[in-house]
Length: 210
Ligand code: B1M
Image 1: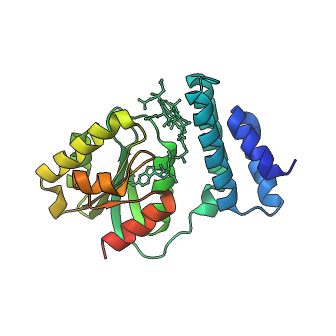
Image 2: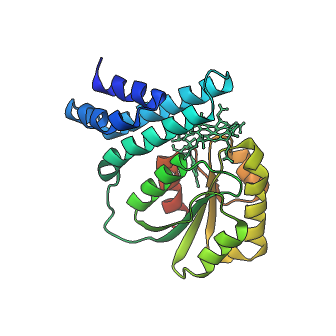
């Protein structure tokens, strides 16, 4: 089995202690960091499918998540390009009630590589916390909201509405994303932009402030 296949298998099985070595092994075999990342994202999709079919449960899903995080740690310096100019600050967080942060962390990493300074508020972030962070960051240009659950889409919508009502659109661009989110939904709730994945989110953040 190639090391990159091993990375997929270990991620799916939640083998946290073995993943760093396997990721390094895949790099040593010549696999591109983005290919290894995509493999881990595929593994998480497979984990999600198994969960949906009740073949695995929350603890296994959590172990896979921890494993992916450890794998991403090895790739992080290689994925972060390190832009030379600063484009301003981007406040990022996962919306209220939602604890998923792997996608948000990747989006944060890519936006940072595009040249932004990141203020990461973590998960389960209330609208007030987003507003507070924007207000206390004068150089804030973008706020990025991540949402992974259909059940937290109303929280995303409420947050965008709350940000608009608080006059934040005069200060920052609001961008959103996450597995259940679409461009139509972004238009519907009044966000300034939507991106499907981490790389597109970085492109969007750059283009939206231009
Ligand atoms: Co959760 N979970 N989970 N889970 N989980 C999903 C999302 C699910 C699809 C699994 C399934 O049923 N197939 C399902 C949601 C179903 C739905 O909403 N219709 C689900 C469920 C149901 C739940 C619970 C309710 C389970 C329960 O308790 N019964 C529960 C909810 C907890 C809560 O949040 N309140 C729950 C819990 C968890 C864990 C804590 C165990 C764990 C998360 C750990 C963590 O993140 N630290 C977990 C995991 C790991 C998953 C899956 C398996 C993997 C998610 C992931 O990290 N993917 C997921 C299944 C799946 O996604 N297919 C699932 C990899 C990551 C790189 O992709 O996050 O999509 P993703 O991010 C992408 C894009 O979405 C996008 O870019 C990223 C990178 O390309 N993106 C943005 C994300 N944010 C963006 C923001 C942007 C732009 C793009 O702009 C701002």
